[in-house]
Length: 256
Ligand SMILES: [Zn+2]
Image (cartoon, rainbow, N blue to C red; front, side):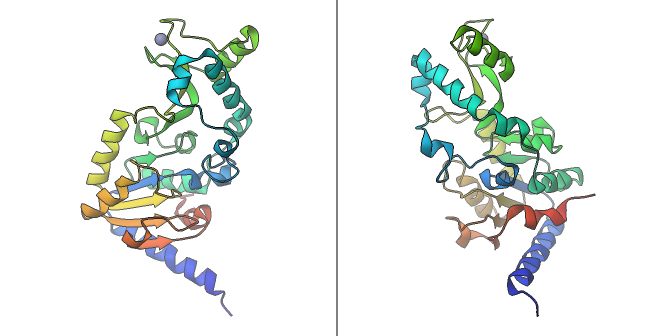
């Protein structure tokens, strides 16, 4: 006797394969769900770090050395998880589709650098919320490695300022209260309007303005696939909805 859940998922994967094969340009849009199998917590989920600590809003980071120190202290608590995480099956599948020419770029809400680690070039990963694996000066944009900041924080008891211009150094992420980055938002919009298959993966599609992209794609005539463990706000818009483990659904798309 066949397991109905298994045959359902096989049918969904076959349908996904068909949609990808028919598409000229597939645009993956990824959220936290693609990285949970890599040990990266979904910060917004119950039990996630943002439910244990109030996020530090951008204006408090800018006005208080104590808040900057606290922000860095929290970041280094998570360093073990970020520095040891390896790409999951979803990241590898998208990297395979990139190499096959089906995907030209990946738009992501994630800050974990795992899509790049899976082999998609950094300039083809459009990060709407930035990247937590390095830091930049908020004034001159000079890049800093986290290990240098950690050493300064430990040696001097305070997080360092930019050695070039004295500006504040922050992880290259977008904080609460910080403006969405213009260039990535614009590229994400262009890609959304250029694709004929929009693949929303592991995002609950509730965080705006990012959640507007699948709607924009659909209105522009693209097919929409939503792959997420749980139901999303936009399921009723999609041509195919798969509520299942992301790594399991995408692993058949990994080229070996
Ligand atoms: Zn600077």
